[in-house]
Picture (cartoon, helix red, strand yellow):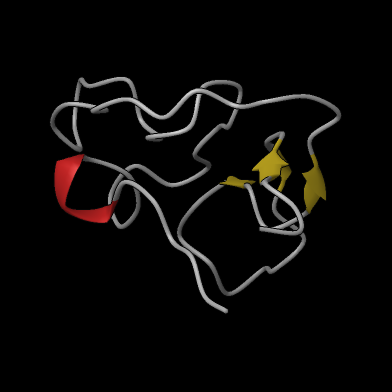
Length: 71
């Protein structure tokens, strides 16, 4: 694994979006990141990665979308 990238939510510049926040700008973590079960999409912890944030809880996060990886 080369990097684990985490988001910090910010204002969404896309005026067409229904979400005021976005987590699209992910950056590489400086240290190890714990993976956890985030719980439900609404009212849960959000991301499956500790330190990551979710901008739009209507479409992202939750147990079924916890971690995304590719190689």
